[in-house]
Image: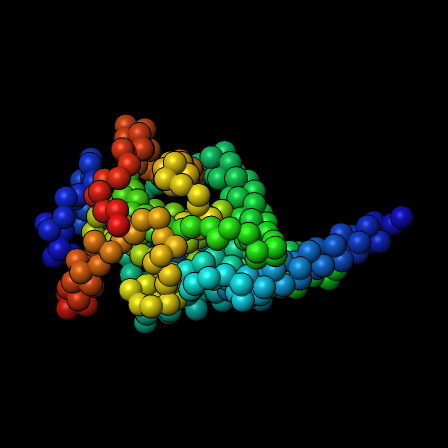
Length: 125
Length: 208
């Protein structure tokens, strides 16, 4: 088997596995009990799935211009997915979207007022 | 930060010093390098021409839209950096498989979760940000809130069975912080990590 064929097979495997992980993330969004657990699904398998798809594309395309763009997509995905999860989670936190009956402990509740005060302070500063 | 006095700071945390001129220049050089690298990667061709045009564009950008100062006091340590990335990629794979399994398994007992507060030992914006980002991508955790004044991360943990697993997880967060700091911390930050082994758990006693 030539090198090209080997790379193509690896690329295909990456694409399929990446797609399956994204599918699993989608299923998790439907099946998980509340907002925060769903954000886990949106953060982890989705990111790895996308990275694998990018890797598959890079192995298939094999040109410098495309690969640099794919690297950027991957880097920004790693940097922004946690931020998105954080923002959505924080926006939903003190409300009814979160099943508090499933929580073993909640160490944020005690700090909520102080944190809200801090944010007001820094907004004024 | 006017609210600093309201809360006890974590141990061995000196007040944040004002930036010196040298530190500001260093920050600006790092920002320029990073933004130019993005510019070059976006184009992907004509390396030197894009480095030069990138530097010009970035200089204008930074003059018009100055970035908030994020101080990078340390330097990159290659070996710990490599160790961090290898462990991080491994964790990302494990995390994805874990979530995929939780999603696809036949309906089992419902896993519990928890929200815990983890006061980091090195309270810098950079360390807070990087630890929070990495935490979201490693198994079990999701960043929910970050408190800059005390350097505390509030983390949502999924798939727990009992308290022991929770405490084990807390130690995992400190280990992750230690890996990040040893990858790009300053000598002072490294010392703070070494001298403060993971704090005893249940600091605030804020259980439900």
